Image 1 (cartoon, helix red, strand yellow):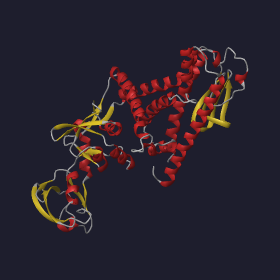
Image 2 (cartoon, rainbow, N blue to C red; image 1 turned 45 degrees about the horizontal axis):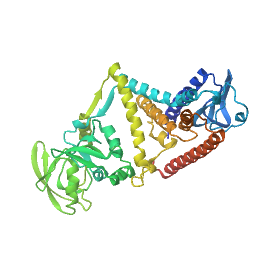
Image 3 (cartoon, rainbow, N blue to C red; image 1 turned 30 degrees about the vertical axis):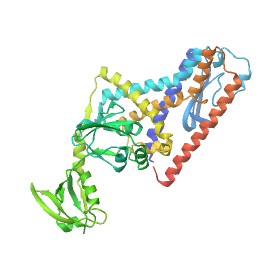
Image 4 (tube, rainbow, N blue to C red; image 1 turned 90 degrees about the vertical axis):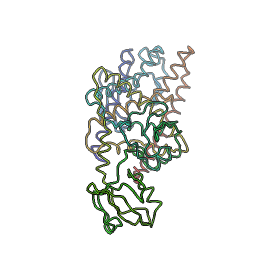
Length: 445
């Protein structure tokens, strides 16, 4: 973890927390509700900075887990119920009509959603979008062992995921982990198969979420291992292997399976050298290797051929920003399919603040920063809408109940529910932080 990574994380969270809390603060003020505190980060026992202005204490806490506004007459995470024992005052939250209270509580998630929309629209307009087009993988894809276990095969061209067109490799690698079915072009025919959860589990276990498939590339020797079989056989840098024992080998992913069948045997390679086809006898090692490193620059060139940079006009960027926001929200909801699945064990990959900071770039990249901020803004909106007491969603549920039944939820029920919610959230926080610390100690980040 570097200071630059930490700086980017704290800056992003600070922007999100301040704007989220403003989403509560502004409608509260508009409805003439007293706001006692407005804090960036939490301030148990003491704060780093505080200033009182027009009846509201503004401050910065020392515990960087979020922030809060303390609204008079509201049961919140502070569990300060002394004020609630007194008769309700007209400037208190509890005195306001249910529809006003609902707007105040929905303000934070509304700001988060529109902030993400604004950022994504801006990124699409000013930067465009760079991605790798699945349709441009002319030779299909090369698939890892975990990807093959999911149901993919070398040479597949990805067409659809859950019946929706799969245009971009970057989103396909993620969406496929949550999918039920995938459609590919395989040997000239469309094939639809169910995603094997055992394969998803292997992808997650091997940290392959972004690399379980990629472009296919030819077998071109970059370097020879000293005293290896390839060097002894006279193979040279730049040689391209196109066959083994008379069987064509067009791509690197075809070579390894053949060699694994020929361990400790002498084979005849068809090699292209200086535009000439030559045959070279070489022995396969007991590990199924020949003793050379493939030229990865060719792989990189093949990958670059699939890259697209799409530009958007302002009129196109605004709806595109909304689509990106909804796509991120949908993806986050789908994540629960693997997080709580005992087979895929996605819960082992859940990261807290330490894990998130480790994912930040070690040099400042503003495009990444704003993309991350937009994604995290959607995540905060979604989390806060979960109907757990202690979160905005819990307050929304109780307010909607009152609007539907015409009767407010008893004060004691609100207090008990808030207490249970706070205990649950604190326990969850301890669990997530503990998992982060364990990963850090064991070097599994």
